[in-house]
Length: 190
Image (cartoon, rainbow, N blue to C red; front, side):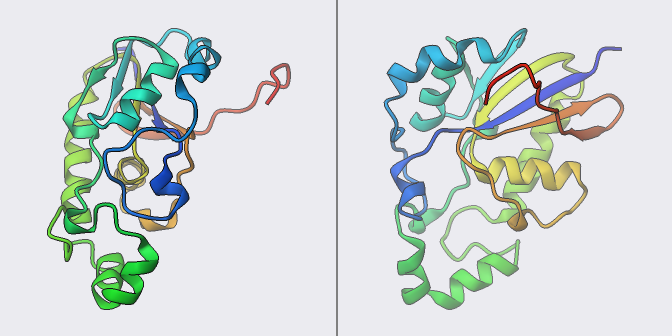
């Protein structure tokens, strides 16, 4: 039985990330069209290219290949009325609600999706991939990658994981999910 090889890639940087605010459906900050050719050969042999429905994930997916499949399970967390709001402003206006949200994964003071709901959505998606052998590349969001890692690592606090733009995480499924930390080929330049 062939293993499922899943590479999760965080979308490229957006203005929201730079300004430390909850995301809206916004474009990438970089000139993603001119960067397109620089990433095309990076993912050799990928059977499927998936992405979330947001503009930033679709633009990032275009850096790696053409015709990505949009997957609803890869959409960003629904931040409700906090979408577009700077974290610094929330710390002033709703400090208790923001603090409660960071320590209670069941809370959703913004009226959107709780972290528990997000992790359940991502866990269900990972379960659906277990019978899909081959290499899958999924362009998604920091919150989705953290939720996937929390599921695979069985409850590690995902708020302790920083996910940088264009960072990649590899997971393998062969009877159970495992985190794979690939090495750097000394022949390749960084």
